Figure 1 (cartoon, rainbow, N blue to C red):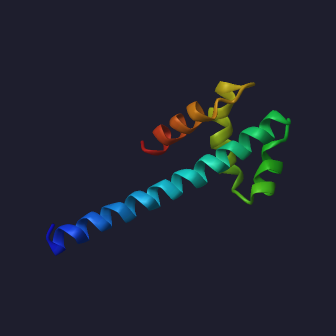
Figure 2: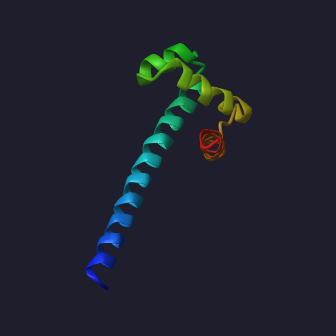
Length: 86
């Protein structure tokens, strides 16, 4: 592989790692929100506990409510990403 090819390949790998880290953080937040919803916590309390904007928590809750009471985290994640990409 040429030096240019190696540089492009390494850049692609780093972008993939960064996307993976971002996905992990998002999935972690969604999981915590779902757990708090299952415990009956209110949106403003969840936002305060997670140090997030109430509007962000509300957007997640609108999606999560469709999957209550089980709160299928994979389905919530997919719908959240789909809505975010619009």
